[in-house]
Image (cartoon, rainbow, N blue to C red; front, side, top):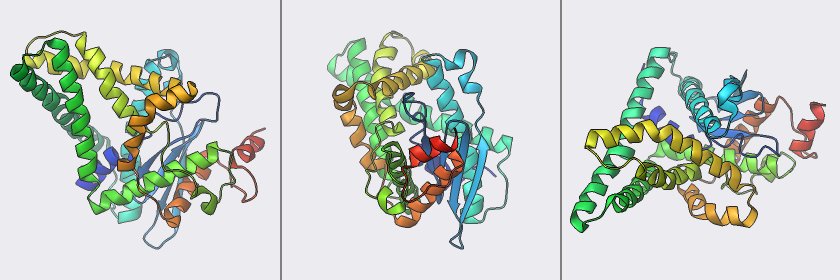
Length: 324
């Protein structure tokens, strides 16, 4: 079974914290992703997943992180961003398949072949929408207005950003995707509450913002800006060369963008000002969750950290005490 439209679009809509979990080394690293009727969370050593079953109960699972992204070359700046993205994509596909089985009653397992074909479809879609189309628009406007190489790259980057915003806005109109975006909001609220040292109750979590500074939506907009700078160094050439060079250089763009997101958390008000335009996009990629969805996100975080939160204790402090 190849990933259906709901699963594939859910991966793109809800996986917006792909690069967040290691962004603040001075705090306990936590990241997450929305899936179908649920959330996955990543703690320092384990993933946790929670999905609302059709009978109303919450199904939970927990498994260890791969760990390869913290070894060798992959623990170094730029490379760690590439590794983090690769792991989040891999785990995201698997989690979406499992969440569909639990929430929608699908019985077939997602095989390695299915994952490979789904990734191929995703790559073709990404290259077509976010590489080839903006490149064509840049050439078109460049020809109309007599722009040079840098000017064409700026138009291409702006077009890439507009395509992304339009895409997110359009898929958000689909009911099934809106549910995923609500779980995305629940994931953000839960992480914000945890990082703020709040007692981890659904009522308290609901008071926190659905906007998170390390969200992958913001990351993608940084990628757009960084792509203008990096792709400008490639120079001109035929369409195949330019499309190919952008695909090849995309991991570098991702790695550099990751470092900017990671560092912006340490820049105080300057970092907030730089990230403000990108943060505003999260109003498209998140929705205000229900209490039932917050319960699922909280269960996923408990699974990832292997702790049961107490209503009168700050969640982060309780976790650290259990690990002493």
